Length: 167
Image (cartoon, rainbow, N blue to C red; front, side, top):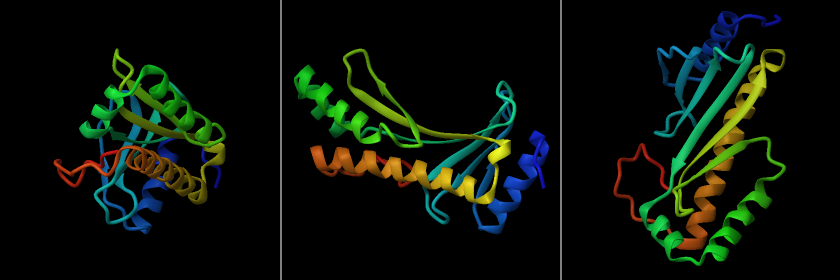
């Protein structure tokens, strides 16, 4: 079945998510035809969002993100500017050819605060395989960031709820 409308895309995606036993939260979002938050991987506290933005016809946007642990931010603050930029450049080079886009949000001093990941595709590519590839690729890049920061600065002490995965 060719998917040409946001309503068809919504119904199809919901069917697949239910078939795979995801917990689904349907957000009312004035900027989107639909906006779901789901558990991914299934049964975990980790979340991803699936959005069809009003301003981008036929686009499916899959999002997730992670906050930088305060301990890691402290380590970044203590680094010299060129050392910190070198660390960010390692990440850029590692992810240069990834299908996932990311936005490393820096404060005015150049300290990473959070990272948002996105994978985009259009209705003409909407298949169950493509949807789950997007979810998986976002999750893998999230794991990459967590591992990269943990390898560089050590594993932070978990002070927040299990819903928040720190990098």
